[in-house]
Amino acid sequence: MTQENKAGTHAAGMRRFLQIMVILLAVGLLISAASIPFFYQSTTMWYKFGFDRVLLYAGKIAGLLAATLLFMQILLVGHLKVLTTVFPKAQLIRQHKINGALIAGLVIIHPLLVVASEGFTFPALEWKSWPEFVGSALLLCIWLIFTTSQWRNATGLSFQAWRLLHRVITPIAVMLLSLHVLFVSDTFASGVPRYAVCTALGIFLITWFKIRLLPYLKR
Image (cartoon, rainbow, N blue to C red; front, side):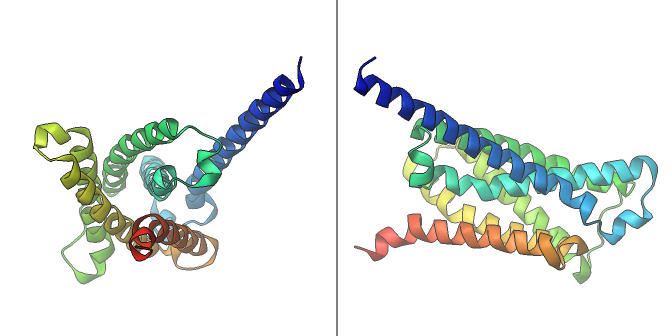
């Protein structure tokens, strides 16, 4: 084997190793998010028993998985060197689309399971229920993004109009997500869960500024 072949084999092996590390990190983040309801129980869990308790746990897990995937989305299309040097851009875009479908499904499952745990009793139209209504607005935003992405031609949107809509609605969805998560449950009132959400929001905002605003400011 020539020196060039050895170098190429070593580079390919290192790239595969880095891909595995990134995938394991992503899986670890998802598992960590799903474990939050168990390690940082909300007071609502104190009054749930039997199958209702299972439904509420499942609903919380579905919501936190959707939240984590949504925060990850901008990293997949942000052209970050830490990712584009490890994964082909086409693979990152494909994963972005897969995550979008998963998020769209999870944001439907999440409220259905939570409401089912309450015997399908919906929040009252009161000010104290504003985090739940923020969640409803978030669901609409996510499904607007998803449907226009999946069926852009059927909706009659041009690519330019779809891209503008996508870039405007996505940060709104992330801000709604942050408000919903931080205030809908006392799990995120303080401590590690609250710091985790604030850190994820900070990373999103920095990345969004870098790829969306900074190019215009440099002109």
